[in-house]
Amino acid sequence: MDELNGRMMACQILVTGLIARVANNSPDPLRFLTDFRDEIKAVVKGVNIAGMDNTDRVRQIAQMTVDELFSLMKPPSSE
Image (cartoon, rainbow, N blue to C red; front, side, top):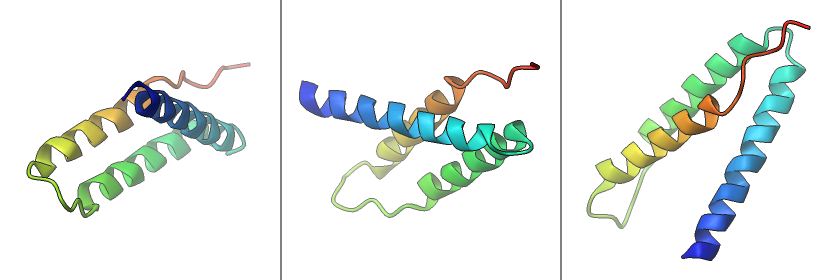
């Protein structure tokens, strides 16, 4: 289980870095991040989760993970 958690953390860090990189190249980084976050949340709401008894709990945790990823990003610097 620890190996799985470590891999998930690595994936989260990678995705956060990729999103930040693309946002930095965007003319309006804050708008890009907001739009991207909203798209990701819509995907999480609509994804089909099969083979689970409590899909609402899985979806809730996925939504919290998305919020956590985006909360880790600091606002663009004014420099």
